[in-house]
Length: 367
Image (tube, rainbow, N blue to C red):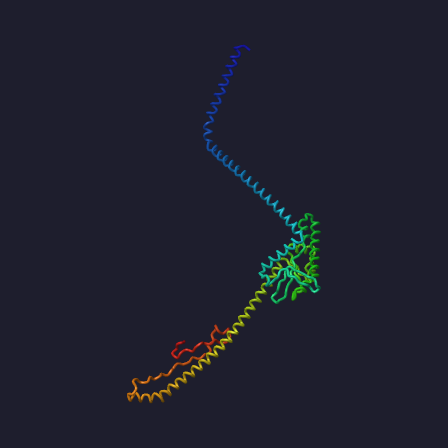
């Protein structure tokens, strides 16, 4: 390729680039009015973009907080699972299981409103008619003096295993075991003969089941368990049924105390009435004595006037005495006597009529 051809090619390229540049400039000049009309649209799109960016940031923040909360819930769930496992392990121990039943029984007694050492005694010792020593968890004293024995040592290992079982057949087997354990405990309580160790006592023993679920689950496998206990003088009671029983006992004690207080009030009223009757007799005799004294005084004054003052006035007439003899005056007061008051509607329901202390004066005044 020679120099002329190279120069011609360069010239043609420059002309082509110039033409393309001019075409682009003209095209941009034509589109500028349209872009000026779309300016509000661009502003709206920018505002929408900012809103979407803000929502995205808020979503990211909320997602982080939710992840943190889920982590906290997971930790709490794991801790609860660990504590539940520890509780289940503890409840498998007979000593801990018995203590838990005693605490539940104590709460029921407190809610019922009974007073310790007055309405019930915890873990008293006794000897049954066979000479064996027994120690129930609670002995409740009724208002008539009788006692009700309550025992709270209930086995429920089978119930725990039934709750933990995932297979339905295994759960049914564990429920049957739980019912069988509860039935065996009923036989043990019946053999201890608690009522013979605390006389006078009701002819039955209350077997306290610390949870309603324990008894309900046992009744699923053996519906006649309650009747089985009744036949052996053992009453199975859950917290709800025992609370109703103890509230009835507390109510009977309140009625007994009210009746005892009413008897004391009646006795005090009788004594007061007797003393008022005695005082009324004294006042009547005192009034009679005063009336007699006034009569005797007036009679003495009359005799004095008739017999003595007549002679004394002769000295006055003769001028012998320096001053005349004073004349005593008669006493005209009237002694008031006790008399029954007029009965009113207010006094009618309270027995005999009241007595006024004094009678009104002749002029209508009262002392």
